[in-house]
Length: 400
Ligand SMILES: Nc1ncnc2c1ncn2[C@@H]1O[C@H](COP(=O)(O)OS(=O)(=O)O)[C@@H](OP(=O)(O)O)[C@H]1O
Image 1 (tube, rainbow, N blue to C red):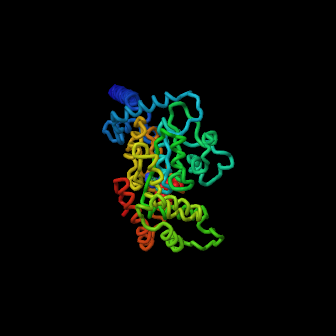
Image 2 (image 1 turned 45 degrees about the vertical axis):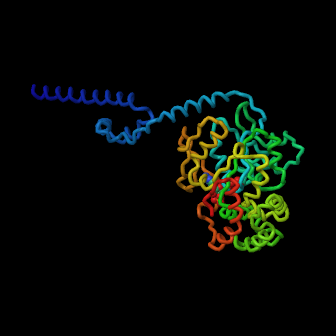
């Protein structure tokens, strides 16, 4: 009898334990969002042990980050903006955002940072012959219209190099050659064809820029084979040995009275020897002389390339203000890629990183460095031109 009672009691006890466990499991499923339930955890541990650990608060992991009011607002606004364009027909619209340069100062990164904005459209459909080009990323967003056109503007040609867009969207293109490459009349052309479009210009240390440009030309095999002399410029010093004296003689120091004339001469030099541009692009004050009759701070935003490299978030927020765009890209969206240390956009919806292509990570990561002597020579070449720039803009950059 006693044994029977013991067995009965044990049976009732076991049944209550199992019921309790199942009840708790159901409760747990209801309370925790689905993505926080780990099925692996169920398989690797007994339910009772799992629930025990759960109640001891060992299995929760990190609590989800609190969603700030700013995040909520952004999410709502973002979705509404996307909705606003859904099912709208697309056609050619001329750009409202144009990046004019400077070459090798981070214009690709800048535009890649802006690209996710739901009101911005960039990137054209490439013709098949260009699709295999190793610089496809650049070709896709660089229209190269004003540096290649004459003054009889065929807008159909421009449209063919732009993405199709909905009414109200902001088409964007960047062509770093606009700022400092021929023809002379690029600033006038842009003003004429796009009278209300505001421009973006990144300026960076011209010394570091020159090395980055040299490396770029090297990778394109254009440094080696000028005049067919394959080994002529076997490193940056040997390039400087030839081109620095030449450019010092042609351009020389900044002289206020001769600046306009010199700004034309620099463009002429470009046509004489293509590789001159590695040095002449960094003569920013001379180039700006050609832009200032058409543009001022209200329609040309000048961005410090050093800041863009070290902390791009606040700049991206400023740009949205400059264009009166809803501020949907926030500074915290820009994080360092743990593999390369370069900044990139972190998609707030998926957490994914938009990494920069390899061709945009050549020198500033320390892979190629200037020697002390190269630095001294280049600093001296740019010194008076940098000073003129700072005076012109009433602003200094941390380059000297
Ligand atoms: N966030 C940010 N800010 C500023 N600069 C950045 C940034 N990210 C990348 N980079 C640097 O951009 C360099 C390439 O310049 P561009 O994109 O202007 O090249 S191009 O003219 O469009 O070909 C490229 O130079 P190198 O390092 O010499 O390759 C990058 O260092």
